[in-house]
Length: 261
Image (cartoon, rainbow, N blue to C red; front, side):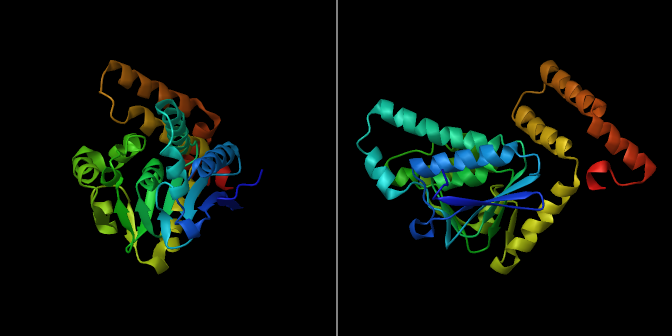
Protein backbone atom coordinates (compact mmCIF):
# COMPACT_ATOMS: atom_id res chain seq x y z
CA UNK A 1 0.00 0.00 0.00
CA UNK A 2 1.35 3.44 -0.92
CA UNK A 3 1.72 5.66 2.18
CA UNK A 4 -0.33 8.86 2.22
CA UNK A 5 1.60 10.71 4.90
CA UNK A 6 5.01 10.71 3.23
CA UNK A 7 6.87 10.02 0.03
CA UNK A 8 10.23 8.41 -0.70
CA UNK A 9 12.65 9.35 -3.46
CA UNK A 10 15.98 7.79 -4.42
CA UNK A 11 18.87 9.64 -6.03
CA UNK A 12 22.57 8.75 -6.32
CA UNK A 13 22.73 6.60 -3.21
CA UNK A 14 20.50 8.83 -1.06
CA UNK A 15 16.98 7.94 0.04
CA UNK A 16 14.83 10.94 0.93
CA UNK A 17 11.84 10.31 3.18
CA UNK A 18 9.65 13.41 3.20
CA UNK A 19 6.76 14.00 5.60
CA UNK A 20 4.02 15.27 3.31
CA UNK A 21 1.13 16.56 5.42
CA UNK A 22 1.87 20.29 5.67
CA UNK A 23 -1.79 21.06 6.24
CA UNK A 24 -1.51 19.50 9.73
CA UNK A 25 2.10 20.62 10.26
CA UNK A 26 3.26 17.03 9.65
CA UNK A 27 1.84 15.92 12.97
CA UNK A 28 1.78 12.16 13.23
CA UNK A 29 -0.93 9.64 13.95
CA UNK A 30 -0.86 5.87 14.32
CA UNK A 31 -1.07 5.61 10.51
CA UNK A 32 1.84 8.04 10.03
CA UNK A 33 3.92 6.13 12.58
CA UNK A 34 3.31 2.92 10.62
CA UNK A 35 4.30 4.67 7.37
CA UNK A 36 7.53 6.07 8.82
CA UNK A 37 8.46 2.73 10.39
CA UNK A 38 7.94 0.88 7.10
CA UNK A 39 9.83 3.56 5.15
CA UNK A 40 12.94 3.26 7.32
CA UNK A 41 12.79 -0.54 7.20
CA UNK A 42 12.56 -0.33 3.40
CA UNK A 43 15.41 2.12 2.78
CA UNK A 44 17.60 0.51 5.41
CA UNK A 45 17.42 -2.83 3.59
CA UNK A 46 18.35 -1.48 0.14
CA UNK A 47 21.92 -2.11 -0.97
CA UNK A 48 21.87 0.95 -3.24
CA UNK A 49 21.09 3.34 -0.36
CA UNK A 50 24.11 4.78 1.46
CA UNK A 51 22.41 7.59 3.39
CA UNK A 52 18.88 8.60 4.37
CA UNK A 53 17.49 12.14 4.64
CA UNK A 54 14.34 12.73 6.71
CA UNK A 55 12.69 15.93 5.50
CA UNK A 56 9.28 17.60 5.58
CA UNK A 57 7.06 19.83 3.48
CA UNK A 58 5.56 23.11 4.60
CA UNK A 59 6.39 25.57 7.39
CA UNK A 60 6.76 22.96 10.16
CA UNK A 61 8.99 19.90 10.35
CA UNK A 62 6.73 18.05 12.80
CA UNK A 63 4.25 19.36 15.35
CA UNK A 64 4.07 16.14 17.38
CA UNK A 65 0.82 14.24 17.71
CA UNK A 66 -2.11 14.85 15.37
CA UNK A 67 -5.14 16.29 17.19
CA UNK A 68 -7.54 13.63 15.88
CA UNK A 69 -5.18 10.92 17.12
CA UNK A 70 -4.98 12.66 20.50
CA UNK A 71 -8.78 12.73 20.71
CA UNK A 72 -8.88 8.97 20.17
CA UNK A 73 -6.12 8.43 22.74
CA UNK A 74 -8.07 10.40 25.33
CA UNK A 75 -10.53 7.48 25.53
CA UNK A 76 -7.92 4.70 25.53
CA UNK A 77 -7.51 2.35 28.48
CA UNK A 78 -4.08 1.96 30.06
CA UNK A 79 -3.44 -1.22 28.07
CA UNK A 80 -4.48 0.49 24.83
CA UNK A 81 -2.14 3.37 25.64
CA UNK A 82 0.70 0.92 26.24
CA UNK A 83 0.19 -0.71 22.84
CA UNK A 84 -0.11 2.68 21.15
CA UNK A 85 3.05 4.05 22.78
CA UNK A 86 4.86 0.86 21.85
CA UNK A 87 4.32 1.61 18.15
CA UNK A 88 5.85 5.08 18.55
CA UNK A 89 8.76 3.57 20.47
CA UNK A 90 9.32 1.02 17.70
CA UNK A 91 9.33 3.74 15.04
CA UNK A 92 12.02 5.68 16.92
CA UNK A 93 14.08 2.52 17.44
CA UNK A 94 13.92 1.69 13.74
CA UNK A 95 15.13 5.19 12.83
CA UNK A 96 17.89 5.14 15.47
CA UNK A 97 19.11 1.68 14.48
CA UNK A 98 18.71 2.12 10.72
CA UNK A 99 21.87 0.55 9.26
CA UNK A 100 22.39 3.58 7.00
CA UNK A 101 23.39 7.03 8.28
CA UNK A 102 20.36 9.26 8.80
CA UNK A 103 20.13 13.04 8.53
CA UNK A 104 17.24 15.23 9.63
CA UNK A 105 16.62 18.22 7.33
CA UNK A 106 14.75 20.55 9.69
CA UNK A 107 13.12 23.30 7.65
CA UNK A 108 10.67 24.47 10.32
CA UNK A 109 9.34 24.10 13.84
CA UNK A 110 9.67 20.89 15.85
CA UNK A 111 7.38 20.14 18.76
CA UNK A 112 6.85 17.29 21.24
CA UNK A 113 7.11 13.90 19.50
CA UNK A 114 8.74 15.56 16.51
CA UNK A 115 11.75 16.14 18.74
CA UNK A 116 12.13 12.37 18.85
CA UNK A 117 12.37 12.21 15.06
CA UNK A 118 15.24 14.73 15.04
CA UNK A 119 17.04 13.15 17.98
CA UNK A 120 16.81 9.62 16.56
CA UNK A 121 18.67 10.67 13.41
CA UNK A 122 22.46 10.57 13.37
CA UNK A 123 22.79 14.18 12.23
CA UNK A 124 20.50 17.19 12.04
CA UNK A 125 20.63 20.50 10.21
CA UNK A 126 18.10 23.23 11.03
CA UNK A 127 17.13 26.54 9.49
CA UNK A 128 17.81 29.51 11.72
CA UNK A 129 14.09 30.31 12.00
CA UNK A 130 13.10 26.89 13.42
CA UNK A 131 11.74 26.67 16.93
CA UNK A 132 11.89 23.66 19.23
CA UNK A 133 9.70 22.68 22.16
CA UNK A 134 9.16 19.70 24.46
CA UNK A 135 5.64 20.83 25.22
CA UNK A 136 4.23 17.71 26.90
CA UNK A 137 4.13 19.08 30.47
CA UNK A 138 1.85 21.90 29.31
CA UNK A 139 -0.95 19.37 28.82
CA UNK A 140 -0.11 17.16 31.78
CA UNK A 141 2.00 14.60 29.92
CA UNK A 142 5.69 13.67 29.76
CA UNK A 143 8.05 13.05 26.79
CA UNK A 144 8.67 9.50 27.95
CA UNK A 145 8.83 7.54 24.69
CA UNK A 146 11.16 10.01 22.97
CA UNK A 147 13.31 10.55 26.07
CA UNK A 148 16.03 7.92 25.38
CA UNK A 149 16.89 9.66 22.11
CA UNK A 150 16.37 13.28 23.15
CA UNK A 151 18.44 12.91 26.32
CA UNK A 152 21.25 11.24 24.35
CA UNK A 153 21.16 14.12 21.87
CA UNK A 154 20.96 17.13 24.19
CA UNK A 155 22.25 15.76 27.48
CA UNK A 156 20.72 15.42 30.91
CA UNK A 157 21.36 19.01 32.00
CA UNK A 158 19.49 20.61 29.10
CA UNK A 159 16.80 17.93 29.35
CA UNK A 160 16.16 18.85 32.99
CA UNK A 161 15.37 22.39 31.90
CA UNK A 162 13.39 21.85 28.72
CA UNK A 163 11.51 18.73 29.83
CA UNK A 164 10.35 20.52 32.98
CA UNK A 165 9.57 23.99 31.65
CA UNK A 166 8.17 23.08 28.24
CA UNK A 167 9.56 26.38 26.98
CA UNK A 168 10.29 27.03 23.32
CA UNK A 169 13.90 27.51 22.28
CA UNK A 170 15.46 28.59 19.01
CA UNK A 171 17.74 26.82 16.53
CA UNK A 172 20.92 28.35 17.92
CA UNK A 173 20.09 27.01 21.38
CA UNK A 174 19.30 23.62 19.79
CA UNK A 175 22.81 23.63 18.36
CA UNK A 176 24.42 24.78 21.60
CA UNK A 177 22.92 21.86 23.53
CA UNK A 178 23.67 19.31 20.80
CA UNK A 179 20.23 18.55 19.38
CA UNK A 180 21.26 19.79 15.94
CA UNK A 181 24.72 19.98 14.37
CA UNK A 182 24.34 22.93 12.03
CA UNK A 183 22.12 26.03 11.82
CA UNK A 184 21.85 27.77 8.46
CA UNK A 185 19.68 30.22 6.55
CA UNK A 186 16.86 28.64 4.57
CA UNK A 187 18.58 29.21 1.24
CA UNK A 188 21.69 27.38 2.49
CA UNK A 189 19.90 24.33 3.90
CA UNK A 190 20.35 22.01 0.94
CA UNK A 191 23.95 23.07 0.43
CA UNK A 192 24.71 22.18 4.05
CA UNK A 193 22.93 18.83 3.69
CA UNK A 194 25.01 18.03 0.59
CA UNK A 195 28.18 18.92 2.49
CA UNK A 196 27.32 16.32 5.12
CA UNK A 197 26.18 13.73 2.59
CA UNK A 198 29.26 13.79 0.36
CA UNK A 199 31.73 12.25 2.85
CA UNK A 200 29.14 9.59 3.73
CA UNK A 201 28.81 8.64 0.08
CA UNK A 202 32.61 8.44 -0.35
CA UNK A 203 33.24 6.27 2.72
CA UNK A 204 33.21 2.49 2.78
CA UNK A 205 29.54 1.43 3.10
CA UNK A 206 30.26 -1.46 5.46
CA UNK A 207 32.56 0.73 7.55
CA UNK A 208 29.87 3.40 7.88
CA UNK A 209 27.35 0.79 9.04
CA UNK A 210 29.88 -0.62 11.51
CA UNK A 211 30.75 2.86 12.83
CA UNK A 212 27.09 3.61 13.45
CA UNK A 213 26.66 0.33 15.28
CA UNK A 214 29.82 1.08 17.27
CA UNK A 215 28.43 4.39 18.55
CA UNK A 216 25.13 2.77 19.50
CA UNK A 217 26.89 -0.07 21.33
CA UNK A 218 29.51 2.05 23.12
CA UNK A 219 27.65 5.26 24.04
CA UNK A 220 26.90 5.69 27.72
CA UNK A 221 28.48 2.37 28.67
CA UNK A 222 31.00 1.97 31.45
CA UNK A 223 34.53 1.50 30.14
CA UNK A 224 35.28 -1.95 31.50
CA UNK A 225 36.90 -5.17 30.32
CA UNK A 226 33.75 -6.28 28.48
CA UNK A 227 33.48 -3.05 26.50
CA UNK A 228 37.18 -3.01 25.67
CA UNK A 229 36.99 -6.63 24.49
CA UNK A 230 33.98 -5.80 22.32
CA UNK A 231 35.83 -2.92 20.64
CA UNK A 232 38.82 -5.19 19.98
CA UNK A 233 36.52 -7.70 18.30
CA UNK A 234 34.91 -4.92 16.25
CA UNK A 235 38.16 -3.63 14.79
CA UNK A 236 39.41 -7.17 14.17
CA UNK A 237 36.22 -7.93 12.23
CA UNK A 238 36.43 -4.84 10.04
CA UNK A 239 40.16 -5.20 9.38
CA UNK A 240 39.65 -8.78 8.23
CA UNK A 241 36.67 -7.93 6.02
CA UNK A 242 36.95 -7.61 2.26
CA UNK A 243 36.09 -3.92 2.39
CA UNK A 244 38.55 -3.25 5.19
CA UNK A 245 41.39 -4.95 3.32
CA UNK A 246 40.50 -3.12 0.09
CA UNK A 247 40.39 0.25 1.86
CA UNK A 248 43.82 -0.19 3.45
CA UNK A 249 45.36 -1.52 0.23
CA UNK A 250 43.92 1.40 -1.74
CA UNK A 251 45.27 3.89 0.81
CA UNK A 252 48.74 2.37 0.69
CA UNK A 253 48.68 2.25 -3.10
CA UNK A 254 47.39 5.83 -3.28
CA UNK A 255 44.40 4.85 -5.42
CA UNK A 256 40.65 5.03 -5.05
CA UNK A 257 39.02 2.10 -3.20
CA UNK A 258 36.77 -0.16 -5.23
CA UNK A 259 33.54 1.42 -3.96
CA UNK A 260 34.59 4.72 -5.54
CA UNK A 261 36.07 3.30 -8.73
